[in-house]
Amino acid sequence: MSTLDPQPFQQRLDTYLQERSEEARAVRVGEKETSEQAAIVARYADLFTREQLETLAGAEAAASGDGREEIARLRLTCQEGIADRELAEREDALENALLAARVPWGDDELPLRSAQARLAVEPAYADRDALGAAVLEVSASFNDERRSLLAARNEFDADVTGVANPVARNEAEKGVPLGPILDAVDRARVEGTPAFTPQRERWLDRLLGPNREQTPASAHMAWIRRLSPLEATYTKERSVPVCLATLAALGFDLEAERGIRPDLEDRPQKSPRACVIAADPPRVVHLITRAQGGLHDYEAFLHEAGHALHYAGCDPTLPLAFRRLARDHALSEIYSFLLDSISGEPGWHAEHFGLSDEQARENADAARFSNTILFRRYSAKLGYEMDFWTRFPSDGGTPDGYEERLTAATGVRYPAANHLADMDAGFYSADYLRAWIRSAQLRAHLRREVGEDWWRRPETGALLRGLFREGTRPTTEQIAERIGFDPLDTAPLVAEFDTVV
Image (tube, rainbow, N blue to C red; front, side, top):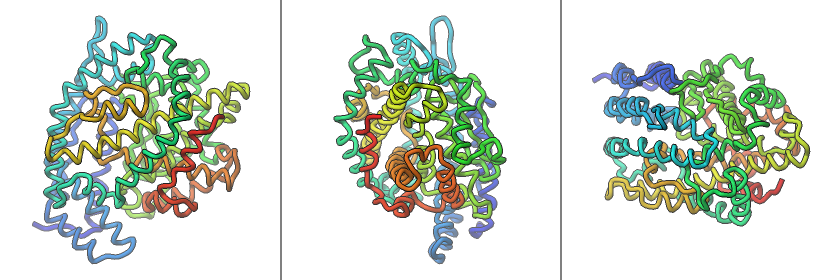
C-alpha cells in the first residue's frame, strides 16, 4: 500500500480535520440532529493505516529540532486516527443516542442537553435536586456503551503503540509525567483548604440558601458556577458588550478578528458547555457559547475568547502541526484561564457594573470561589482518573473512589454513576491543571511587569499577541521558564487562594 511523506500527509490531514471540525460544530451548536463523523473518517481512511504510521515514524526518526517535533505531531494524529477509523461508527451511534435522549420532567420531556442547561437556571433547590437525579439516570443509562468504547480504544491504542499502560502511554504523548503534576496540585489543594473551607460554607449558604443539605449534590454546580443570585447584575443581555469592552481594553477587537466566528444563539440541542472549535486557524475559528444569565456567561465568554484569540492570532505561515496540532491542550488553556480570571478582579466589577468598592470585592470573591472549587474538583478528578486507568487492564474501569475523592475535595457530592460521563479523553484534567498553575504564574508576572491593573492594560495584550503568534509550538513548561518559574511551582496559585479581596 502506498503512503504519503510528511508534507503531503499534512496537507490532506488539514482538509480532513476541517471537515470533522465543521461536522462537530454543527452537532455541538444544535444545527444538526445527528452526527456523521463516521462517513468523514471513511473518506479519509487511507490517512490512518499502520503503513502510514510507519512512514511517519521513520521520517520522525530521521529529522531533528522543530522538524522532528512537527512530524511527531503528525504521527500522533495518525496514531489516534487508526482508532478513530475503527470506532467512529460506534462513537457516532452513542453521540446520536445522547442527542435523542429525553429526560422526563413534569408533564413534559426535555432533550438531555436542554435538561442539563436548565440545571443552571432552575430556581428551586428541590426542583434542581429532582431534575439532577433525572438527568443522571438518563445519562448513566449509557454507561455500558461508554465503558465498552473506552475499552475498545484502549485496546487499539495499546496495540498500535506497544505500550499497554494507559497512564504511561499518555505521558509519552504529552511528553510530561503525570505523577509530579498530581503531587503538585494535591499539595496546593491541601495548602488552600484552610482558606477554602469557610469560603465554601459562606458561599454555599448564600447561593443555595440556609436550608441546603450539608453536602449538596453536584446537580447544583451549574447554579453555583452561574452565581445565580447575582444574575440581576450580570444579565444575559450585557454579557457580550461587557466582554468585548474588557478585551478592547487589552487591545483586542474581537469583532475585527476576521478568523473568529462567534455562535451565541440559544438552541434546544446546543450543548450548554461553551467551547472553541479551531477548524482552520487562523482563518476559521468558531467561538461557541450558550448564555443563560449570570456571571458565568461572562467568564465562559472570556475563557473561550482566550482560545479563539490564541488560534486566530497564530502566524498563518506556520505548518498545520504548529497552527492546530499539539501534544495536549495545556498551552491554549493558559490564555483562557488568564482571561476568565479577570472576573476575580474587584476593579472589573466596579468599572463595568457600577458597583461600590465593597460590593465589587464581594462579587470578585464569589468569582474566585467558583474558580477555586473548580480547581479542587479537577485536582481530585486527575487522581481518580489515574487510578481508574491504572486499574483498567484488570477491572475494566470502575467508579471506585470517584464520589469519595471529588466530594472530599469540594464539599459537593458527585454521584459515582457520573464517573464515565465526566471523563474527558486524554487526561484533559492534567492539561487544565497545568494551565491553572501557569496562568497564576503569568498573573504574578504581569502584576510585577505591567501592574496590578494588568487586566485592563494594552501591554498585557501586546505580550499575549507575541505568544499567540507562536501557535501551538511551545509547551506550557517552556512558557513557565520564560517568565522565571519552575513549571510545578504552585506558590502563586496558593497565594491567590489565600487572598481575601
